[in-house]
Image 1 (cartoon, rainbow, N blue to C red):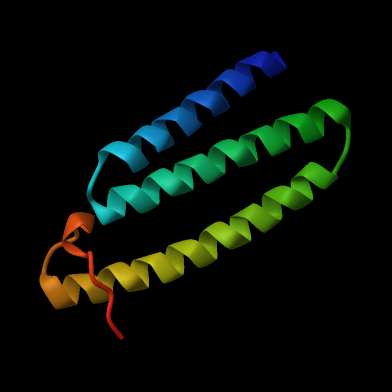
Image 2 (tube, one colour):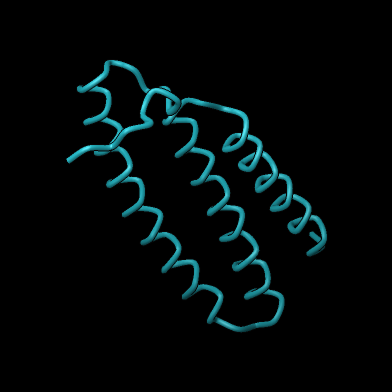
Length: 99
């Protein structure tokens, strides 16, 4: 397939992620949208690494996956604690963060 097809798919994935971040108020949807945007960037890294024959793009994919895994673990832990405190996952309800 052509590189332009993969670029279009990545742009569509990123746009869906942006819409999810801006439109939804659910914390789980927010984190899933961020993961979708990170995967769109990973797709571009892989496509351009293959196109140019350079393996550095694949190393960047590895780093992005590590960051996404850490973000998912920490984010889900925060969501679970907030749900235990207020019994909702709506991010509009969490305007005060106290220690």
